[in-house]
Length: 103
Image 1 (cartoon, helix red, strand yellow):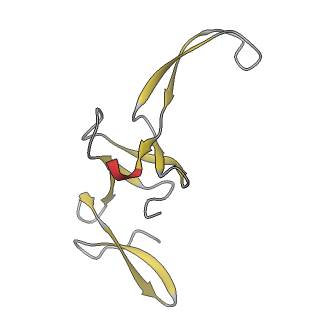
Image 2 (tube, rainbow, N blue to C red):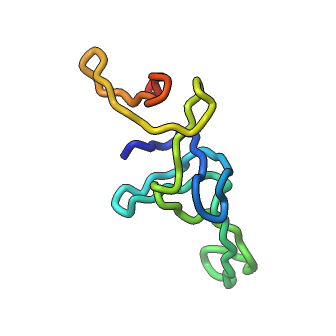
Image 3 (cartoon, rainbow, N blue to C red):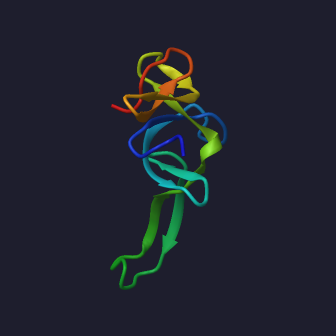
């Protein structure tokens, strides 16, 4: 996966197009990511063991990884990711400016 936890991403398609957020979780097998504050869904919950109170809860649903692009700090725009080997380690780089994502 090119996108990892704590990467800042921008949504490029769907109902939340144009919004930015931090990746909270990457679901590798499903090819999806959960982004903080993006793709919020309402869930009606009955009172039970898990939640003492019932009601309507807001939860973040996964987005397809193809619907987000990583934001480069140097370019300040969504970019594609490339790879480079430095000192025997594989690092992620910006395809536009060559900036490094892995510190």
